[in-house]
Image (cartoon, rainbow, N blue to C red; front, side, top):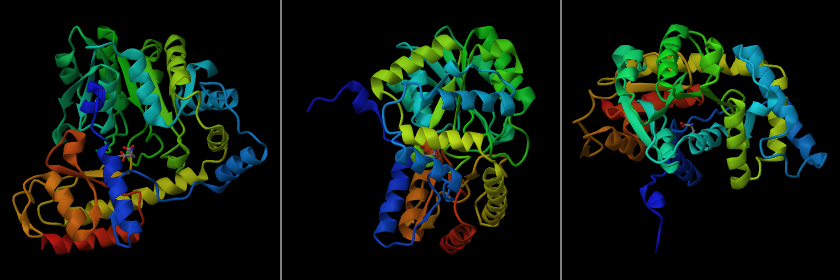
Length: 393
Ligand code: GLU
């Protein structure tokens, strides 16, 4: 059977694969603690669900403009003005099927074959694959715990070459939870501006910050805004993963190209979900604040619990809902009847022997680590810690 080189090269998303496996085991009656995909366990707030129901009842069920309904794009522009201090006209916003789709469209719009996109590791699993699908070449730059897993301006400067087109900056970061400061972002943006690069800023976890503040690069200087593709969405902050609404905000010529790509790929995103997202962005934020405070408690519970276990070292992250811990002290041990050589094997043993689903650091370009999502109930977190303790004893 003929498959394209592209199809042969693509690897399926590890986060999605592990999450699906955990959900399958659960459906089969196994008590799996699923700390794999980053997915809020909270229901979508009621007023948002009601807006979706009203959209169906009012027959708002037809195609919308490819880039999304104008009211939603205006609400997104207003959100960026109010929350982030950066101005976008409504037609510079393109609503897509989640932040993931907005990123995919972006790489399709900015990469020519052979163009390089700099991606700091640990990175979210999908960036390198998306760049490759778009014909580009991911250039991975490793960051370490010593710099809080943050890319420095010197590291960035050192890897820029004649084919570099863009850099991906993700703060708060998935998988590490690192939050870049204003000064750190300004330094990175200065390097990008000098080199004429696009900055693709993934800000999906903006509302989930426990230490530090969220800063949008596009807001720092007018010339940065002209080089930034700002990606955001409602999935994480409003517990709306399944509605699939995200967006890109970018200078008008790029926004037009992104909208054209999307119009050929999907026509537009789901009309009902657009109305629900409009309610989310224009409604009260109490639910967001309450969820954030709950995530903070869970983070503390998980970080403290993991750091008590032998061989595990877990820094306390400033944002998102993941901890990224070193398991170097566990590797090489005999666990569940087998020698655990690496983080991938350890994640397998955790799922098979302890029914805990986590994502190995290798999936994020950082072997020797595991990512635990704490977007799950404190009872599940405590149970996971108890199971881990028994396994590692
Ligand atoms: N973004 C979440 C994660 O990293 C959801 C799964 C995915 O799309 O990768 O787990």
